[in-house]
Amino acid sequence: MTARLEKYFNAKSFCVVGASTTPNKPGNVVAYNFVHSFPGETYLVNPRGGELYNKKLYKSILEIDAQIDAACIIVPAKYTPQTLKQCGEKGIKNVIITTGGFSEAGEEGLQLQQQMLEIMKKYEINVIGPNCLGLYSPALGYDTMFLPSSKLKRPKSGPVSILTQSGAFGAAFIDQLSRLGSGQWVSKFVSYGNASDINETDSLEYVGNDSNTKMVLIYLEDFKDGRRFMEKAREISLRKPIMGIKANRTETGAKAGASHTAALSSDDVIVDDLMKDAGIIRVTTWDQLEDCVLAFGTQPLPLGDKVAIITDGGGAGVMASDMVSDCNLKLAKFSLDVQTKLNEIFPSFYATGNPIDITGSATAEDYKIALEAAYNDPEVNSVVNICIPVIPDLDINEYMKITKEIAKRKEKPFVTALVGGEEADFAAAELLREDIPVFTSPGRAVRALGMLTDYTNYLRKHGVDPSSISVEE
Image (tube, rainbow, N blue to C red):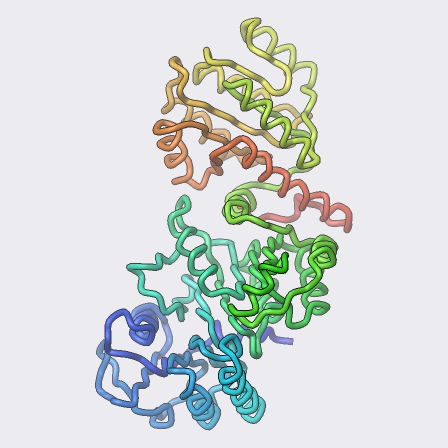
């Protein structure tokens, strides 16, 4: 069966209904997006007529004498059922409704959404929304996000697909990804809002079969069909990692969700067990979401749970070691050759076990020796590179050069934690510019490895070789 979203992303012609001549209005932004980026034919509709971006403004969809594959409706809620009906009469089978004011807005809105459902059924129309941002794919020039680029920056094409019930959440994360590293992160973005028709499972089915999607991030407040969703996730998670935020975890969150997208809560303990069983890596905080992108989007999967830590601060090494335990990882025991080499080269006041602590006397050359020894050791599955750059003899530029050289080998996971102020921020920005994963604390760096290793363990449990899964290519 062809995934329903494929009909949208494969569209050769697109219509913006509610195109506005007023700058920065939603209908103006979406019209601009398609006229300037969409490679197919774009049609614009406004009942006043006229012209916009050198395109004719048709007064009605029914005036357009051409086949239209997909459309975006951006008109006030009370006019939406009538507009959807015209789409049906025109033969448009794939519609995005970004307008709010439906089931999330009380009884009147619920009645409007019910009218839409009847029209959708009569004309066999697929609908995304209402109350959503719709779709975005930089590679395809597809962008129904109605927020202007001066406010919402768009990431470039990359391996991550994002599915979100909340448009605002999705917009904020999209904006954040645009300034993360190279900004080359997004394959497909699907904001489905109230999910009157196309929902989280339809979206997951599409990106699960999309060859350009290497990992999936999902924000959920409820499930339209929980059983089908978990079955689909279980199938897809054996081919590509899925990270999920399931909000409505508490009674307070459930009340907020009901007024947001008319979401219904579920027993969170049951949801947590189901997500684990389906191979979904559950994320609970905003920083974890970005950490997932950095870790899975840039690193190979580890082939085991043994971690090496290199640091110039003993306390940072202790913190990282605690997190190793918290994440069900293990500190690696170095092979005899590596341990002997470290003992011979380093002064006696350096700690050459694991963690390797090269202390406040560390130089860039010391980092090179320790990092390469740990990285090359077959007993080590992942490496944590911790640097507090305030120490006097450390040449930060040379340290960055060494870090880049090792990170780009991509034979095993290699994450960096830069801790401190101005110099740490400078080094982090320089490394991130090349999509080298850098974190602001030792704990976040280790936790990223924990998520990678959890996914490795899940794959092996189900008979899949983790080396066969590549996200960061």
